[in-house]
Length: 247
Length: 226
Ligand SMILES: Nc1ncnc2c1ncn2[C@@H]1O[C@H](COP(=O)(O)OP(=O)(O)OP(=O)(O)O)[C@@H](O)[C@H]1O
Ligand SMILES: [Mg+2]
Image (tube, rainbow over all chains, first blue to last red; front, side, top):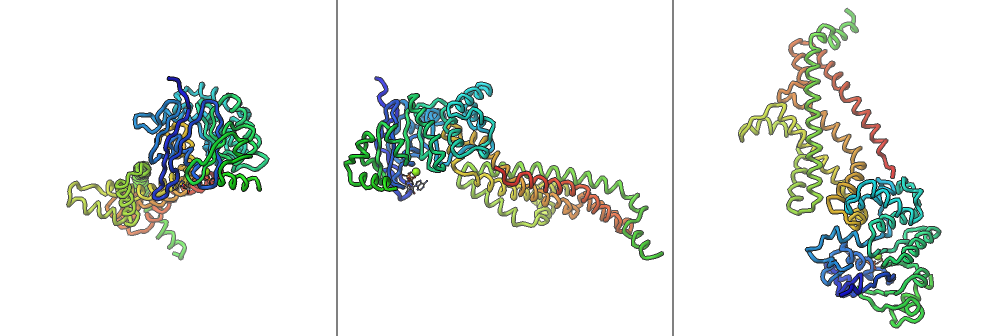
């Protein structure tokens, strides 16, 4: 049987103590698809992403990524995580290492590359995000936009099958947002499967294949960007979209 | 004899000083040995406890916290006396040297564990998550991402605490360790002259002044610079 979906999450529930944050989320993502996730603050968008690479342990449900059962105790989670890149709002670069060091760490420690191989792959990844000339800079010497692009390079150097983005541009000054979105657009054109939580509606309109609207721990509706933005079926979606467009 | 001559003869008596210089020097050797042993074992044990604590095993952490708080609240001299005079009732009779070493190593372990632990916990959660999301294991993340950053934060307080505790080697004189103070005070009672004490003080300055200056330098070098 051929692999239909590269990400297949079924019936994901997540409780934080008494707080029921995900209430049975199903999400299937095709290869090369870009899924854009929107929803009010606290609706569980980040938690959903974090359940997909098991940074957060789902309370119940199943997650299969690239044919690997992410929740099985038999799965080598550290090995599996190489296939799932994640980019965070706050970049989370290692401040004590250069840009090159940030990218090579997992290549050497997880992918088992020699230092020379890792350096070559890392330089290629930095080149893809337009920062080949910043390899020897530390995060403190880079702008926010450059830091986020190094963070993207750190993920793509491992050749993941899926990339998760959790509000990758929310911490950036407006003039730096474009450079990061451009890198993301390039990734998409190269055929990367991407799940993006973001408020960049312009990017969603012209780059997303599908927009998913979440509210209160559930997917309320989903569809092509045009239909979700122009013609939402649900009142809650309409209210949310009206709200962000007023900004 | 004028008052100045009397002063120098009392506190800086050349004959006495010459006679007891070898004793003071051998005291310095003992102090250095003791200090190095305390620093190496105390810091290693403190780091080991902090790493164990990072595993987040509840009962183990309660035990670590209890031990650490115990040694942070007992005066070092009390620990020395307990080990030297108390332990023989229970089993082996440690020498004064070993008692002082163990006691101060325990105290340094306790304080340094807290400092290492504070360093580890001050590293933002995002650092762990970024590292784990690229497939590094818990311990790979701890050793490659978290500890190098934590060490930077811990070096200034650790240096100060280490110096303070290492100077406590002078307490060993109570349990007959022949370190600097012990040598100086027995030389004083043998010569009926306090000059050896002045030499002892000078010996401590020779040993610790460079360390204190180095600590000041380290502190400025490792001040926040991200
Ligand atoms: N580790 C945690 N412990 C307890 N509660 C948590 C934890 N992480 C998230 N939550 C709670 O879960 C809910 C959903 O959080 P989540 O971060 O997934 O929302 P979000 O949709 O990403 O919101 P935002 O747009 O503000 O980022 C929130 O109420 C949040 O307070
Ligand atoms: Mg979020």
